[in-house]
Length: 366
Image (cartoon, rainbow, N blue to C red):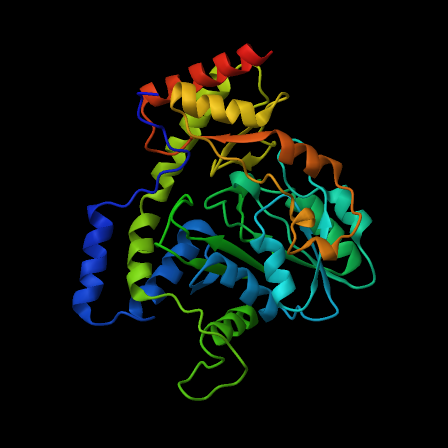
C-alpha cells in the first residue's frame, strides 16, 4: 500500500491550544484554579443548557464520582448497556454496586427501553444509558421507566458533546451526565472529564469527592479522591470549546456524504428529533467484518475502528456479573459494526477514497 493511511480518528490541537498552555505555565498557577472554574462555567453554558458542571481528571472519574455523589453503593444495581466501553460498567463496580447489563436497540446501538424493563429488580437503583457514537439514547422512554419505578437516571455522554433530543442537550436529562475529554473525543482537554449536575447537592458532592473530600483546605468532610483537573488541561479545553461547534458541523457534513454514497452496508440512522454529533460513523456489514477492515487498510489505505468487539458482559473483568446472559442485539452488533473515519480533518479526496474503498471491498465479498 503506497497511499497515506486515512486514520480512523485524528485529534486536532493547534497554535491556539499551545498558546493557552503557555499562558498557564507562565502564570505559575498550574493545578486546579481559575482556568478550571472558567472552563466549568463555559462548558455548562455552551453544551448543557446552563447546568452547573464539575471538571475532573478523566471521563471514568466523572462517572465514578457522579455515581458516588448520587448515593450509589454496595447492594445497589445500576442498569447499563453491555455494548459500550468498559468504563461504563467499571464505574458502577468501583462503587461496590452491581452493573446489570441490558440489550441495545438495533438501529442506534443505544440502551433498549424494553430490555431495561426486563432487567429491573428490587435492588435496581438507577439506569445509566450511553449516548453511543454521538447519538442520543431514547431518554423519553427511559425517563418514563425511571419515573414509574422510582429510579435515578444518569447519562454517559462521553461521546456526545453537543448531541440533543427534541431540542434538549444530552447531559441535561439525568441526575448527572458525564462527558469525556480524551484526545480522540469530539473535543479534548488533553485528558479529563466533565460532570453536568442536576442539583446543587450533586455539584457539592462531586466537588468534595474530586478533592480529597474537602471544600475548604484541611477541612475534610468525606473520604475522597484526587480527581482534579489541572489548569493546563482546562486551558486546552476552553479553546476547544470555542471550536467544537464547527467541528461537529464538519462531522455531520462528512457523515451525510458517506451515507449518500455508501452501498451494500447499513449506514447510521438518526432518530426523529435527534441531533447526532458523529463521534463515530458506524456501519454494519453482513459479511466477514474482519476481512472488510483488513482490506480497507491494506488495499485502500482507509483506517477504521471496531467498537466494541467483546461486549462488556463477556469481558473477563465483568462476566461474573452476568453469568449465562443472552443479549442478542449486542452480540450481533459486536460482530458486524465498523466505524469509518468521519473526523473534521478529512478532505474531499479522503471521503471519496473511503466510499470507493468500502463499496469495492463489500462488492468483492458479495
